Image (cartoon, rainbow, N blue to C red; front, side):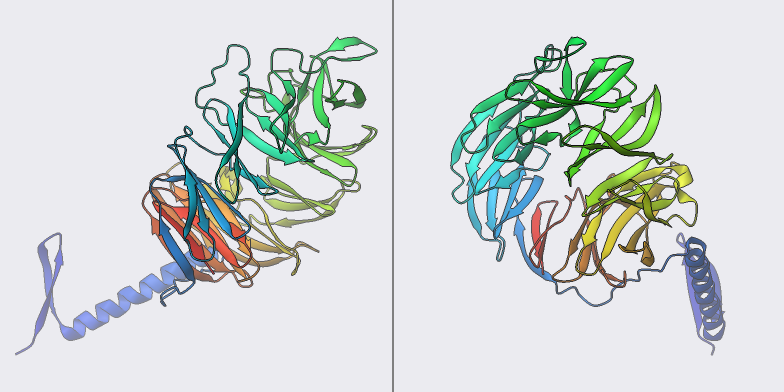
Amino acid sequence: MTKKLYLFNNGGIIGAMTKKRKAVIIAIVLISIILTFSVIISEFDFKSPGVPTEPFSGALWQRPLKNFATSLTVDDRKVFTTDDPGNVYCFDSQNGESLWNTSGRGTTRNPRPVISDGLFYFGYEERQVGCLDENTGNVLWTFQNTPAPEESSKGVSPRIIIKDDRLFAVSGTVSAHNATTGKLLWQAVPGRKNFDVSFSQGQMQAYPLHGDPFDGKYVYATGGNYSNLYFFKINTENGHVIWRSDATWGGVVVPFFGSSIPYPDVLAISQEKVIIRIFFKENSAANFFLCLHSTTGKELWSIDVGATIYNPTVHNSLLLFGAADGYFYALNLADGTIKWKTEVDTQNLFSSGVHSSSPIQIDSDNQRLFWSYAIEKNETSNYTGALISLDLNNGNVMWMTQTNSSCGGLAFNNGTNWLFLTTYRFAADIGLWIFNASTGDLIHNQQFDHYILSPIVIGKETFVAADLWLSAYS
């Protein structure tokens, strides 16, 4: 008697067949799947990352968290997290052991806290900044920024920058403090005269630029009348103008936070050069870089890329960035010329607009860089994109791996030669992906239910906070 196998679809019998016929059909299905997958891979011209089958052994330790972490910071064999109730936790980076915690200081949100010279600085609600002893968690001092006119204090956490033993707190106002004692040195408030400066045309208002405009006791700012907006270098201790640039940008001087007009920002102060990105020039959108001499204010070079710019980063003598024309660029800081540019969007995915992109990661030892981008396909919440590795010297593509989710954080661990990519897609596809940095091969991936923060590397360890867990990989 011939044995038969019954196949079901939605609870109904769709047929009965012999084992021989079953084997033939299964073979046809498998061949179809393989051919379809091959077509997809060749269409995108990407290497498939594959799926690891062996269990991952690179997790060093995991630590449960009481609440969802809002930030993650590492320093000197310590890992720090903050959460919504305003708690700060400190763990041993080698074993996850709890070292100390403080609580009840109000909601703590991004941006990430800053650690410098054994002091832990963090912003929390109502424009407050706190300073803790990194080793004990003891609160050393706090201060609160003054809200701008007609502006609420509620729910605003200042961004913190530490430079030259000064703490700059940026929220609705910008204030400078002694980084050790918290003593106020100066404060600029939108809607008032930030600095009492003057030049041949008379009195003016000047507004600090976005990004990182602080250079010791000096700040880079913009001001003037609506038709001629200049860049300035101002001594914050006496309000004197060190220089006014000849370069101008179109637009309107508005309070430097909460502006509807994208405001120029300082990308870097390097090699006596101030690199400024301009989003709005002569009453239209721009994708413009301007380089000024930091001592004289003289324009050294400028370039209009002509396409939206993603993740500009200064590394040594190069300005690196991706652009919406499908290329990745390396500009020479000395003169703004293009050292190389490489097409990274061979499938014209950028035409639908980049949904997300990662910070650029540099491997100086092997002269390579890593970058990831993601595209939303037809506004369907379905994504495709790539993780790429380029040669820093000439821009050659070393490898390119397809990804199928939005991208968030990217971190390179030189000690393990691993790349950590965090992905998110609203409440779905929240994951951690670990790749071999030399080949782009997938080593491990893990999915989460609610959220994941960007990974952070220190030494040979990489730390990730996701859902209610803090994990270390090595």
